[in-house]
Image 1 (spheres, rainbow, N blue to C red):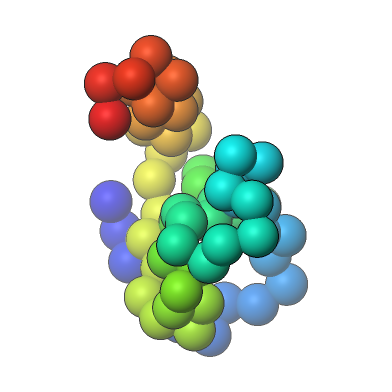
Image 2 (cartoon, rainbow, N blue to C red; image 1 turned 135 degrees about the horizontal axis):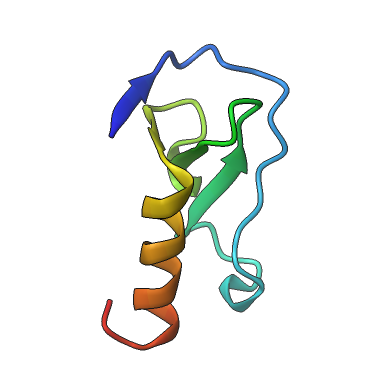
Length: 68
């Protein structure tokens, strides 16, 4: 994981449809490089991290399979 500067703008953030209207979620945006930026929806101006596509796909699979 690598930190992104907090001033990164213009990203299209999304969260799981299972999150409803709450703000206690992880949000993700695809970066132009194909990597994924991740942030806490409660702290949208807070720190961001970026992960590779393979790492993000593995995380999503773990969540879908109920292991996280």
